[in-house]
Length: 451
Image (cartoon, rainbow, N blue to C red):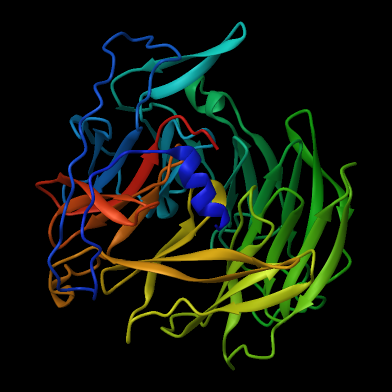
């Protein structure tokens, strides 16, 4: 029995059976409706609350957001927005939807209205109506948004045209709630970089002068530094000697931080004392010409990273498992349908699956399997999530997905059918359906995480 199935037995949820769908993009969809879980009406609902969380959805046409209660699928609020965000992410503790307004140099927030606070030897759970927050972050060209153990680092790229330099802002949910200033790091030039928050440290990219850079595209950094927080500002304490040309993409797990480079993956190992050892994993021999690893995913409970190799603007890609302890990069055959391209990816709850949603309406699970001391990732199962003709996808839209952080569930938005499907990842079956009267996009799970 693999790790995920063991986790599923511990999770133990009773659902009616549904037929597993075969083929993608044009098939009959069978939906099993769960009995609704009624949320307590008191503002303080206490430890007994078993809410599934809340779902943020973006309505691009009306420039507004809708927030649903996932326990009942009721619409809780419709919220007009100041501008249309280019991306939406959950905040550090999943209470707020963070709205990246890159061209407006701003990050806004919507309060999902569900959170916990410590009280003596337990936590009290609170529930309020979702609302747009009055406060926001400002900085030049916010782009990369990284969440780790309650902290978020937003990398501000800066702008060469205006002379604005790059910077990083690090915050937690209480900064948003109380309109507190974030911790900051400021550079001397612009760059398309990324930063990983790790306790009181920040692992961030460094762009060198063009004459020194090993990057082919000088806007991309080629070095990494370890910064320590002092009086709400980060100060450089260690510069990693190994170069990482054309650095793009980063992730971390319990022991390591990884960065994608044009010539491989830079892996930092946390020594536990604020210092990091570094090594470089060379690109695998089977990496196709013209591709480079530029996206990485990590999870606290997984010893491996998942990496995506692709070309800018291209449809060809390769998926890899990266094992920093073994120093290996191994290809994953996720067995996509002909012509299918991934549009969303991510680790499931407890890291027992890595989920891939493609543009043909298929959700694929790849899973880890142990062979002796070695863990490799392979195709697990596939689910058809749409009975629509995918050629009728509205312009500028795609299937999209968010993953729950309190259980084994995914929520997939289908812009063609204008609904969001609730998917039990343990059974890989559709168990619910949230109908909308708009084209849903940017689904974002909000609530109380149990990871």
